[in-house]
Amino acid sequence: MKKYVSDLKVVSVEHINDKYVLIKLTQDGALPEILPGQFVEVRVDGSPTTFLRRPISVNFVDYEANQLWLLVAAVGDGTRRLSRLQAGDVLNCMFPLGNSFTMPAGEGEKVLLVGGGVGVAPLLYFGKVLNDVGCRPVFLLGARSKKDLLMLGEFEKYGRVCVTTEDGTAGERGFVTNHSILGEVRFDRISTCGPKPMMVAVAKYAKANGIECEVSLENKMACGVGACLCCVEKTTEGNVCVCKDGPVININKLTWQI
Image (cartoon, rainbow, N blue to C red; front, side, top):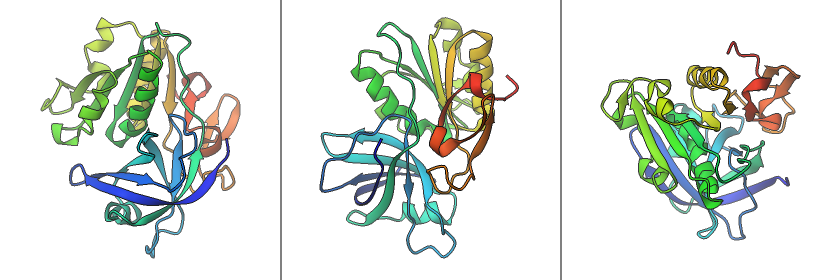
């Protein structure tokens, strides 16, 4: 796919809670094709400590409004500066980068999308794309507490939403792999993104039950095009650059102990 480096205009910045912000961007011309699971590299201007672009998953693409959404966790100087953007500001982005989630073979497939923390971000757009082709997914979203759950109303537009929280303040208490939905439904395909321990647990569940599974890795990235070798992941086929050959990788190619 063709890559673009563009100055996108900030439409709005919504502070979801004290850590997460939803940034909606647009441009004068139509946005290019963007696939679920891809990401952007954003340039952070005005930061003396942020020299490299920051990789951020595509949270959603609204082609009717010509908007690209980014869900950002403000955890460092660069992302905190992004959280202070205002409508009308300009954000330079390189996109779309990486590969995408695999679409199901047919409408009858039961698809489970599992996310934790800011890892829920790419699952919203994937859920929308699945729903558009007649495959309504189940979202299984985990967080530490109710206040850490993100964009539930948006997810509910495209599929059934199941929730776990570690403290039991919303949904079922525990981790995503403890949710009762896993005992109620036999899924054909699982896609997951979030903290590595969560993805490893989901991958173990999928492998033990013979379910096709992909993970969206969140290795540290710098260039976004496979040049700097910052995000290398060891696989059964040798080392790969997550930014170029991923971020979505089938668990059968990973060397995780699953």
